[in-house]
Amino acid sequence: MEVPSRRTAFVALLVLAACVELLAALRAQVHASESPSPAQSAQPAQTPVRTMPAYDRPQPPVAAASGGTLGVARVIPYDQMPAHALGNGGESRAIANGTLATGESVNLHQSMQPAGAAPPAPHVIQHSEFICVREGQLEFQHEVAGKMVSEIAGPGSVIYVAFGTRHAVKNVGTVPARYFVIAIGGDAK
Image (tube, rainbow, N blue to C red; front, side):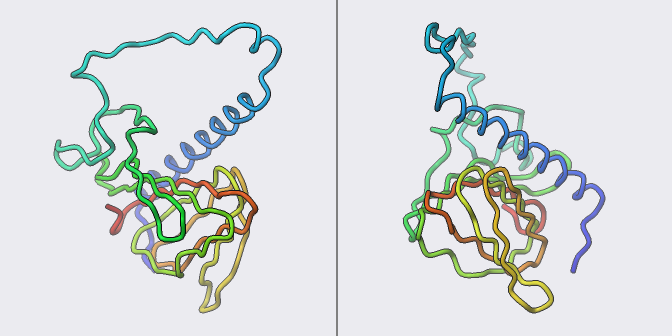
């Protein structure tokens, strides 16, 4: 098994920290929208609106033309993430792919697996992955010393899939499972 470089490990830790913060923010957003406090329902929220000139608006989530990097920091709106229907009734939305300024290749997408859907077959990856579970429950099946092992990951959990690991994730809950996949290095494109 290939040992990641310090730089790759550092980037992976940064991505993991960002994923955890994203999940916390999404969870807080969901809870706030489920039961607004009396103060919230009495007054509409006053959110400052920033208008951007047309030349400064974010581009769709594709690799930037500037040297193959992901380009400048920006917000990637949900409605600009191209959706792809999956054969099991699920959905995948491309968020970003390309190369970081530090040289690592990255692919980020979010997926949804319906409850009871057939999972993808176990497969081997040639990159490292973090799977950040937003909603639902995933069964993470992965090979350890020649044997398949299963673990359950619920909302807020993060699954680490090491380079070269044979694995699959399956929705074992009663609601759609929604999760982010962050692929780093190797063949992540």
